[in-house]
Image 1 (tube, one colour):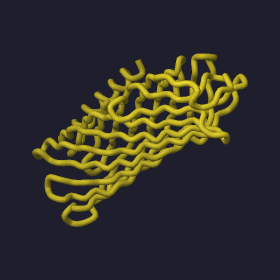
Image 2 (cartoon, rainbow, N blue to C red):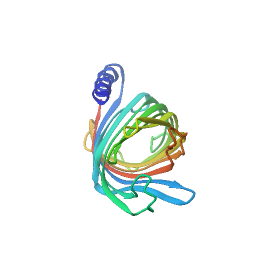
Image 3 (tube, rainbow, N blue to C red):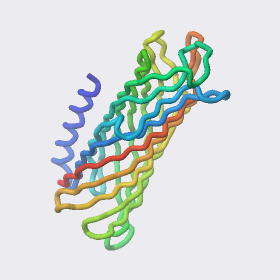
Image 4 (cartoon, one colour):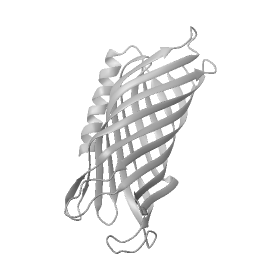
Length: 255
């Protein structure tokens, strides 16, 4: 229901932007993720979730200004990862238990973006953005674990146009989370996650087919760090890291 509501909001924003903006771009891409998640203590690994490209797939929709204005994006993905760990509280070491985990991930960002031409011809451009986001990860490991948090997002990039039709860029986004938590339905506990932060680096290549349509491919490295949570009912959520790589291919419609 939450995803449906956010999708309705996103569609409304599309019509609002297109009605009021001089130049906007709507991009839609198919994504595949190389998944890499690990929980650790000072003694070493507790468990990992891994999957190669082709197992966790999804799509991203983004509305953004050509130069200055409000932007919004929504990314959805799902798929299976390989769990390696141990049975909860069994005392057995990492690697003693293996299974398949189902995952659902949603990520939304809303903010303001401004792009500056660094030379008179527009060969070099520098986009800068400030926004706020929300991330939700449902992890099914025999029971449900739901991680979610809001986050502040600051981005900067550098793009170079080889020609009027082709360009290559690099974009870096730095994120600091707030209200980070993990809810699990095994005991019904909610854990407050500490000092959640991360960054995303994207390298896009774009090729214009016409004045109104472009194609693009991109590589993204998406990193999150989570410190150990508070203790609830004698349990806690350990330190963890997400180091996902995402390959995307899609179309850009220019208004």
